[in-house]
Length: 276
Length: 362
Ligand SMILES: Nc1ncnc2c1ncn2[C@@H]1O[C@H](COP(=O)(O)OP(=O)(O)OP(=O)(O)O)[C@@H](O)[C@H]1O
Ligand SMILES: [Mg+2]
Image 1: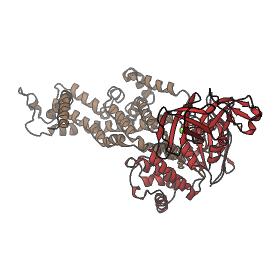
Image 2: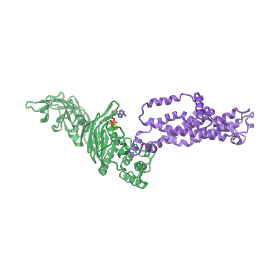
Image 3: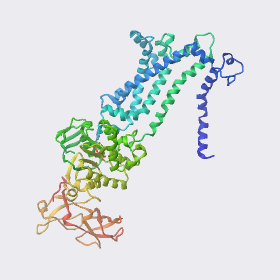
Image 4: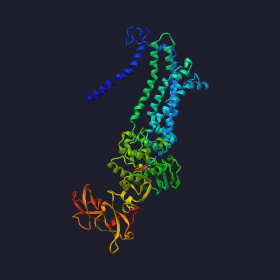
């Protein structure tokens, strides 16, 4: 065996404990989601289900309205990601490129807002949205989420923008590109990796957010996936693990899909090298 | 093509003033090189012409029009950056055609113009590559190509060759000069390399600490530097300077004694008026004659501390007159470290500067 192969084997060995921690819940989810109800409570636990039983999923979508919950979650997460990007992109650009008075104070302020837990603000937020008549409105959550994750998005994007050489934009201006044209045709394509990471972060945070979604969306048909999963555990006399696990499995899928589709941008970011 | 006029331009960053009243006229089709030590404000001046840096005071005019408040997009100048600043996500052809596509040119026309520029710069085989897959010299050429596909009013270069190795730099230097002869474009070129300045320029502007020291053709600057700074900056190896006091002999002819030696170096007639003045005598290494000999009274003698053979020339590093002296000769000299040589200075090649002001006296 070559020393390189030995080395990578060693690395994988060292990573194993972590892999177990990460993969074990998935294995449990997958195995439980594919079992019949009566199979779960057998005395002897087996990892492999008797057969590929898809009834749990059918039950979830047909009788429990989980499809609606997934749709709500997607609507909110995509919306929150888009709205926060729409505001954060120009804000981060201005912070990175323009001479602004009080720039560093503003950056510190952004950081401080991140120290306040959303839970603390929930009562206030509820009253705000009640006043605006937006209780039981998915858009209320779109705005709430984008507001909460925007500060981080601005912070993150600015750090990334700072790494893009100013020469490139100046060269574009000399070539006759307006500020907007150089932003769109030179700056933005180079920032895609940074934008990808930022949107991924916003999307995942919004997807997993529980407290605000629980408070503001009172109607069962408006519940997001995490809230619906929680309701699956608490509302019945018995805990239907097979259904719950099927639901959590499905709830992880969109995040995985978003991550996989963005991945190529993340890698491309590392290989760009136009300036000397 | 166009003329550029710079009138009493100043630049300050807050309280720090980096340019103190620059005046310069660049005529149509001229190749002007701004040269000076690091931090003297060359790039700042160039970027002010480009419109990338705000002008704190004074005016910049292109073809007689004041452009202080015109944005860089509208000045119609092309710039080659030290970092090349190639757009990493565009191919060579897209990089070169970017300005044309912005101005709304049609695809076939862009292709044609890019093709012509690529031909001039020998880039035909690389048009579909991304910048990251090019060598340093090729990237440099793409940066040049991006500038020449348009027909700008003037070219601005900010140390475009400083990232290349010595051999490639010499090669590209020649190419840039040839390109200028073909295109006859008004050009402003910033460098801190005096050889680059000498070989490329129609006119050199020597800058120091935010001021222009002297403007002139390469030969003017080499033969009659007007300040001690210019004398020390232009020419390689660097000029030798000796400090001393102008004296008059019995016939009232001016002369000077160098260092502790009892040497007697006659000075030009005109120095009569400066008897008693503290001066710096400058002489280029090429204008000192060194002859192996035993120390002799009345001569400047030096002991050899280093011999450099470049094949073409011999450089001697000597200690003479209580300081270091460089001598360069075309002849193959047979001397070794520790040997003694007699030095004679070519009388008509002396540059005499006032020690206080650094201004030329002869
Ligand atoms: N943004 C800035 N704020 C403050 N001072 C600056 C700024 N940009 C440049 N300077 C100062 O202005 C002076 C001139 O800078 P400039 O870049 O023009 O030098 P240069 O002659 O091009 O030098 P080099 O050969 O090293 O490129 C320097 O002393 C530099 O420190
Ligand atoms: Mg510079």
